Amino acid sequence: MHSRTASCSCGQLTIEVHGEPRGVGVCHCLACQRRTGSVFAALAGFAPPYKVSGAATEYVRVGDRGAKFTFRFCPVCGTSVFHTEEGYEDRYVSVAVGAFADPTFPPPEDSVYDSRRHPWVQLPPGITRYETDPD
Image (tube, rainbow, N blue to C red; front, side, top):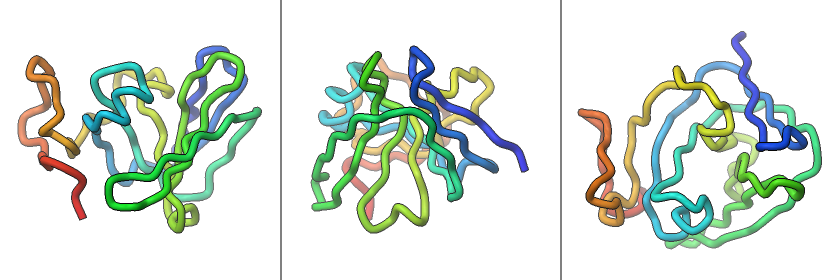
């Protein structure tokens, strides 16, 4: 089974995942814009098992629909690497696509909070767009 490793900028925090992503998406919500320091977050979901190496600092945020997300980032360089959703930790982990540093990574299939997308951001043709958080 194919494995991929995502890491922070300094290499202290890594996550190894296996198989193809269950889904790839971008989120334009204001919380993700602030969290990433960019105009959107690009995330890929993977099924367990996965292996985390290194220390992580955690930040918990409650989403618009009440879900609790725990974001893990490197305490040394500050890079956001992955997050989990409360109650779904045994089903998937979401990894920051940029942390793979792989230009051949599959493109996003979904755009969430498209209503908050900066107008100059161009998305791949055929991407599914959600104005807010889909059910």
